[in-house]
Image: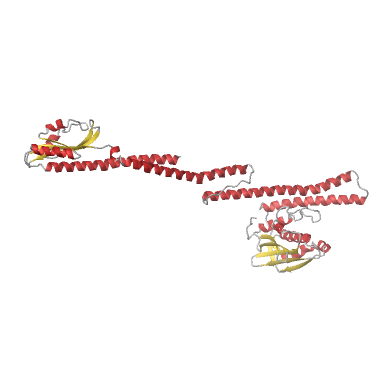
Length: 462
């Protein structure tokens, strides 16, 4: 509105100044030059002989047919009688003009005449015979007003002005629609987001700076919505994971407190169950704390030379009993001479968690392949096993907190659903990549790739 009002005011002032310039410097100057030309021309026709009645009659006839008013007199004193009006504050022939006129020179007269209510431009020219002054001619013209001069142009200017401001208002409305309306929508979305409503989205109508900002807000809302969903799922998972062991602990504690057992062996079995559930709780809390430390980027790797091949063999030996129970064997493809400087504890966590998941979900009488290889810059550890229990949809979610393919979370497979999340964070902490996929043979491939030189990469976001 300020721009619109300012433009209107500027246009009006500019139009007034421009019209005044045309009137003052063009119209008046043109009239002045015309009066001088016509006066000189009229006086020049009668520069000889006497000022006869015939000559005076011709001058009067010229006065009738021309746009100028012409007065012709024999004596100078008759001019003030013939034109008895003040030009400005002076009579037509003011004191001091007589000497100039009698010397044969003309005088230009202009000023406001009250009786005409107009400006008047005129000139007095002496008529001479070459030596003597025979009479005087006064030729003048009342000036038209500004509205009269531009009377025909003003409607055109008004039409152009109206069209201009109509177009200007249209442009302002377009600017308002394209700029302020999206900003208001962004403001409203921000209020909704602050209230916890992350489902709202902005409609993007144009690809410009405002459109890019709207797209960024949509991405922010979507990210917050996903984060809220993950938070709810996380809390639900924590409650579920805590409820199960606490239920067992509470139940068996009541049994032991009330003596509801038949033999010392049954009592010992109840105590062992309580001990196992307490261990699960301790492991769960420990994993949560560890995962939080890794995600907050406050963990510092404790670097030391590591023989990765030997560390993998030692880690795989920890699963010898569990693998034997399912008649599972390991097939190794390992670079035994590979030595890197890294955090042994964290690298063993990667090996342990990936092998642990493979053993849990591999069918009996199967083979788990362990590959540890390197190129110029990276180390790649892969675990390949058979599994028909993991769907394609679940593959993409492996690595999320508390996500497990056994939806019932039975106690047979065990675990907290945090192992692969910890692996993922450790790998990303070193600037590496973690992935789970299925090959053409239907086998599951879990891979962790990280730089040979620990700390040479930057942590990557999910």
